[in-house]
Every structure is written in structure tokens, then in C-alpha cells.
Length: 99
Image 1 (cartoon, rainbow, N blue to C red):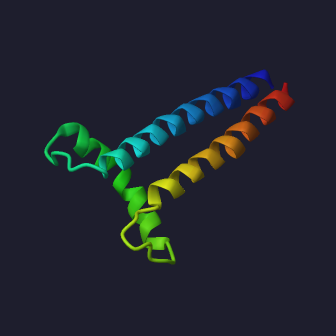
Image 2 (cartoon, one colour; image 1 turned 180 degrees about the vertical axis):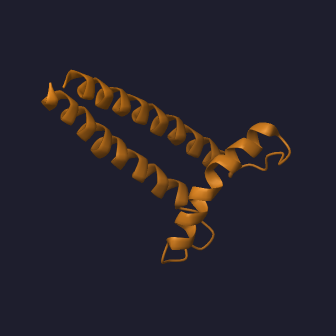
């Protein structure tokens, strides 16, 4: 059973790292929305292509109009914090209880 436990611990660690990296990408995208960046910059293009599919779905599913303020990055960040607090912690606890 220690193999399954180690696998779950590794999965939790990788998931936590991926969620943290994506959180910083969303924060950088939100900060870029405050300025007028060069749309042909490769970093700006990467940030937009990495975040726009998820932010578009969140914007489309929001039931209210915000009057020009985009709250979709905030909702995505809240979802990331929830996943880190619930899913990653649950995987770690499950792995430790299997041992």
C-alpha cells in the first residue's frame, strides 16, 4: 500500500504546484489588463492564450453584469484556493491514512 500512498502524495504535490503556477499566471493576466500591453509580445500572448479559455467560460456563466469590471480572475483565484484547500489536502490526508 505504500506505493499507492506515495503515488497520491506525489499527485497532490504536482497538483498543488500546477495550481500555484496557474494562480500566478492569472494574477499576471489581471495586472496586464490595467495597462495597454503590446499584443504581439510573446509573454502577453502566452498569458492571454493560457487564461482566456477559462476566463471566457467564467465570464459567460456569470449571471450578472458588472458594469465594465471583470471579476472573472477573482472567481478563478477563489476556485484555485478552494481546490488547493480541499482537493490537495484531501489527497494528502488520504495518502497518509493508507500508510
